Image (cartoon, rainbow, N blue to C red; front, side):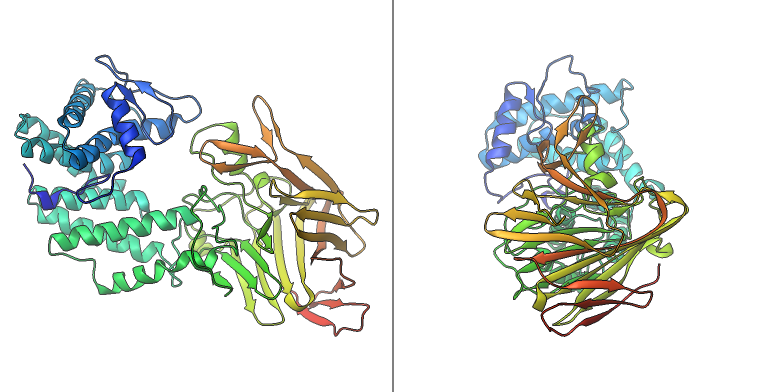
Length: 547
């Protein structure tokens, strides 16, 4: 039915290396056990298989991977690598079961969802190509009808989104267009894919779905698409390829000194990088900044703003701190995409090292243009590094966090300012790495210890907040102080939660000393922040920012 060059496998493909994970899932399928996605719960397959099965806690994600026939894509990948016909036979059996399900009127909210339609189109095309190559019979008219329905949905601009799901649709549409000799499908898919590229990669080459994991995934998808187009004498064009090469250099720019990439937004654990650089980084479009200094062995990330809401957490005005290659303030990870207590916690404002009014805030869809939440100041100089952003997403309140790093003094200052029409429970929360030990010193200083690295936290000014040390707890319906270290995995940790008596305004300065307590103190005015020490070192006059 299709020439081989028109097929864009969802998984594997000719020339790909054997995968223990794919082999495991395919072999389980031969025994009538479906693992819809790696490490998801198994479900038994048979003549009366329930395609509407919902796995508790991950109902939506589980349904998505069932409906996109990922297990069939896995069977086909292993079949093409091994030539063992049993894998193709089982793929045939599962496809037949799904077809009977939809032809009898069955569907779930994920059956005709953009992600599922895009992925399943590619699986069905690969399946038909494999069946034809193996000279096995299939109902061509039946499959033509189902693929035509997929194509009509893929062509519908009202269902198309300018994110990775839209790109999945476009990749499938191009493949279908080549297979069905519909050049209108091909050019619509290429045009929309190019639009997604230019809208979702910033001038720095950073992808705008608020997650390093998705930066890697979408970059890989575009490289895969370009290779597929090249095999069919097509291309995305040199301008796209130039920026794509630049985007490939992104991870070392945001990686920590230990080579690991922080779990920002919907990111899970990732492989340690071989390369790292000490240059600070700022992406205005996403509101992501990293202040780095090699002499101070300091890495501090700041998150405030976004241009797209996909995979965005309530993490604005949050910070991450790594000192001497040891984590101190971290992000909470993604856990999974289900409706459960762990997911609810890690995406909430309580799951991040941020400054808040002690309540949720609004994140408008048009923030790319309205800049309701944004990072608006950045400086990377030898003696002073700074970043500042504001969050106007709280109803009737405005908040700003400014971070100043003085590498020569091994000093970081975090100034949090807020104003509201009502009294607020102003809160400064810090999510600690599970490896950090906490010591409260007699003078109110908090000492944090991670291996051989230490940092000291103290507040300047007359109105110091009160500290509550929250320890990890998992209840029947809620949790607190946990982080997700991998998909479907959480560990308990510790949060430092500083709060003030309810008031309409707050202006608080946290002093973070790296390695040893410092004699430096800070004093704020409307126009600047003065930092001076008792040891005769020269003072710093740092800028203040409106909010």
